[in-house]
Amino acid sequence: MTAGKIQFAENEGTYVLKFVGDVRLTLCSTLDTFLDKMFAQPDFKSVIVDLTETEGIDSTSLGLLAKLSIQAKKKLGLVPTVVSTNEDITRILLSMGFDQVFILVREQAHPSQSLQEVPVEECSEESAKQKVLDAHKVLMSLNEKNRQAFKDLVKSLECDG
Image (tube, rainbow, N blue to C red; front, side, top):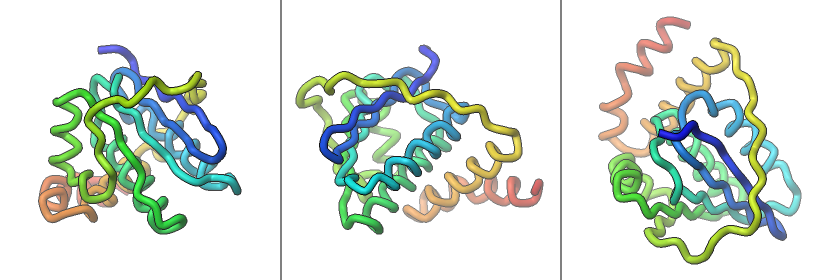
């Protein structure tokens, strides 16, 4: 698998976030910081998450995407769009209940405009652990199946703190 990276483009307040390769915990600080900056932009209107070149994605990254959707709904009343043409990735999204918090599109409409890579941000072990914990709590809030799937992990992380 290709090492993961996150790319973005912005046009008149609409952001495109593209996940390329294997998107894992190592990018959690990068993604979290970028989302905070994106939501802080006064002209922010909408976001599309492009997973068409995503080879793998872990539950921490999925939790951050769920957080993105919840914040977009709360701040702007909008439901973000996720584009996934990879059946394996789409199956993961559906199993996590993402069809309840995103508009899922299964074909790519047109290539994104020129994308810039989001600079990778280093993350301390303690910060990474907190992000993993927070991301999984968000996933648990989506549905009962997720709550059951992640309750032991969350309990273990909380006990280690």
